[in-house]
Length: 126
Image: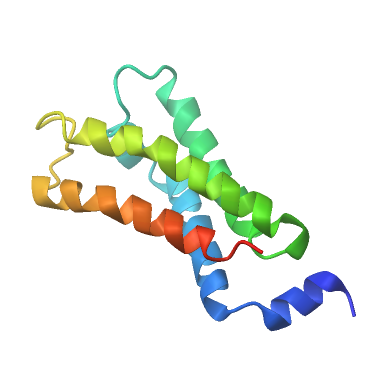
């Protein structure tokens, strides 16, 4: 039996939930780019390019979770991506305009959520 097929049979359903979550989130970068452009830190260049690249990264890493040959690499990529995304989360706490109208308490809760998502990914390393 093909190793990728075997992985699809033996991997837990929640790994595929994670994959679907990242694929969906990445797709939203292309469906609703203005939402992501509004929260880009001003000190970063080429916001449209960065939104597209981050969306593509989420899609590719999400798909990579579904295959044994790329799962661990995708997990490391997701953890690194989430660390980089902390820049946006901290930037959104810097002021009312940067917050995009999201209440401060939600923005504060998103920071530990990032670490929870990193742990969730790390949990699948083999």
